[in-house]
Length: 153
Image 1 (tube, one colour):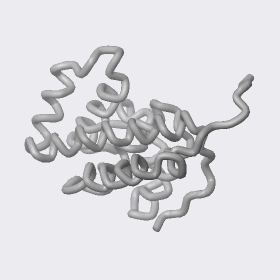
Image 2 (cartoon, rainbow, N blue to C red):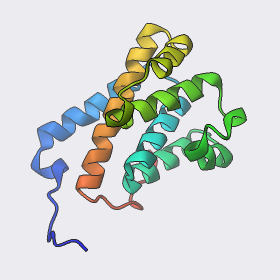
Image 3 (cartoon, rainbow, N blue to C red):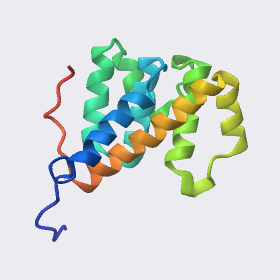
Image 4 (tube, one colour):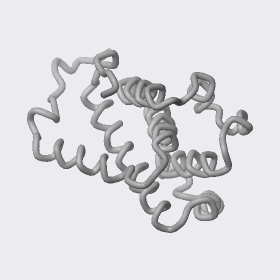
């Protein structure tokens, strides 16, 4: 049971930081397939338990044409491999490794699999995207942002 009476609102109390996060987020996905970016954001949000981010990114993914079936299977992508390309699987594995970096760091085999699927520039962007969504989920979880208020633009 929580004894915290309030959580600060990062967006309003640190607006320069928040604007920088928005800019970082926009730049981090630059040049990546939007559906791949959504899968990465969804998987990191699942691992970090951020309901707000999950709500947002699943809505965005649907809005851009992602299927319900694949959205439901992201959490079990290894077992549902036929629904995800080798490129998507490599991105999801890298997402898990970076998100859970304290467990095994980023194993060479995970990094190498991603490097086989992505050109160096794309891989750098993918790493940036993963780092950025992890920052966002930490803002969401720490601030206890509530899902249900977002709608795709």
